[in-house]
Picture (cartoon, helix red, strand yellow):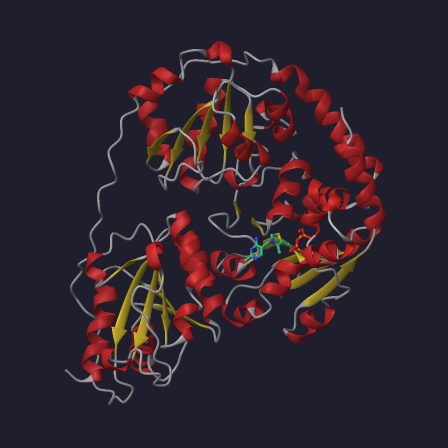
Length: 519
Ligand SMILES: Cc1ncc(C[n+]2csc(CCOP(=O)(O)OP(=O)(O)O)c2C)c(N)n1
């Protein structure tokens, strides 16, 4: 077979197995694949994106899988280009998303010789990806297809494959009998539902299930139900649950990001039942897990009986909610105060992406509750601050009025992400960066107090960088907001807008001091 014929067979196999989107990071080794993909695009059978940086491309492709629920391939050249995909592949593994790394390689005889751009590519993603021919892929988690190609090729004919080999693999079976019993027994011990990320098609099912069950819920924004379930939600779940741990926790959807989920590791007397698409229990302790798309389980359960609030959480929720309101009013220019104001603007967008942990936590606790924000995503598989903007841009590539909210280090980590802007929808797009001058999540760590000044400096990565130059570099609009009134000028436009919010450090410190004081 010539290189051209091999490359045709590879792309044909992808297309006939239902892969329709390809993110190309070009190099000499994958040039034949790139040529065929360009033709596939012209023929209308593939959508092709490009970027020069594989790390960003991997996350953008991950975002595409979130948007479509279908696989997306990243097509790289050989060498460290492949290694750059590792973070996105790991994230896709923990989220259970069909990300394909299609990596061009030098023929096997070059491995270990030190020949240029020849590294050991097979197995490079370890246990985070299956590998081999695409025909073996179940398309529910990441996959690595490493293809050996000669660099030289003569372009020949190519036409789209007519055969459709894509097959829908049946979803796993499960039984709800045990869960159904569990939801009815020992209710005096207190049952709480914790809701993490939900796929859009599951939201309605979970909403009705919670209304029927009538128990307190700890609901995260990425469920899309944070506002809809406000009447049943604990306003400060980590603290309320830690003070009075329930006997039973039902977790629905992704692994919750809040502190109490981690506390459960050390609360063996609290029983935990998971309903999750990925099958990952999210805890290293004993718990039960049903692996299935969440809505299917809700349907299987049918209408559940009311379980109620045995531990009287609801009695305390309105007082706690008004204490939070009072704090936000007292410190409007603190980071939580600014986030509250911002949330009213962001909720006018069509979707919201939350970056790293502090914005997620602050949004969950302090964002407005009046207007439902149903399309909310975050990368929480294994991710902290890596590839967040790229994932957002992939997820929302076709969407107008898309908003994201990230910290300053998170933005600085993904500086090449705006290179996507020329290929995606920009109307009404708003990047919000909360610039608190470093990784302030660590200033919330109790143990930071006991660390030396130098160690604190090493932890926080403090800086005084401002992002107007970055906005100018990529022709984004720019607005800096330093006080309450600054929000008056926040108006999304035709092109992307970068909004840099600078909270008042003194007010933030005062806010958190009051927040941490006993209630
Ligand atoms: C890839 C990766 N590197 C490092 C970390 C550790 N980490 C977690 S949060 C954080 C700081 C984030 O800072 P910033 O984006 O400014 O947000 P802030 O905490 O100030 O809201 C770091 C370095 C991580 N989670 N993931």
